[in-house]
Length: 156
Image (cartoon, rainbow, N blue to C red; front, side, top):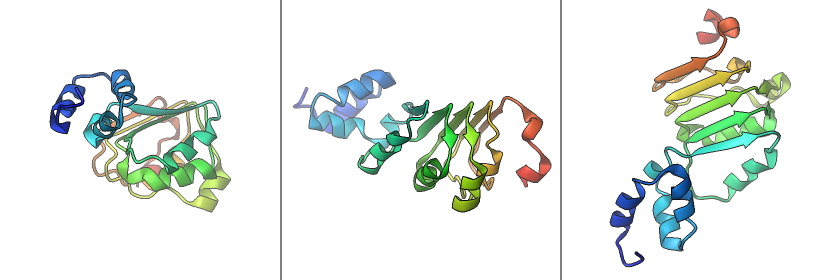
């Protein structure tokens, strides 16, 4: 399959599930290059779970532009806020599950600005609204497990 042009490989890889695409990327440099194309990464979630703060360092050296991120049981502190600010324009889907927002980090780092490409925001068991300045021009799906913290003031 190394003799196939990139366009043919790209078409073949478009039929693979997320796990198989990641596995295919390990075969050779050509496959790594082809599987790294933006539209082939759209269904792959990068998950930060249980204090994996060092995981964000990986993204400083990668050329891939993942667009789906999920934070599970994390304290969203200055480190994560700065990471999100750096990649906010490429994010299409963002989930927070049982996360805690460090209010002092928001005060020192500031809120996330406009999220121009965000299509899906999920907030489950977390009070994360103070993190955003609420500019989601392309948001199509908002899932909040509890509206207790959702007020008109926050949404303005």
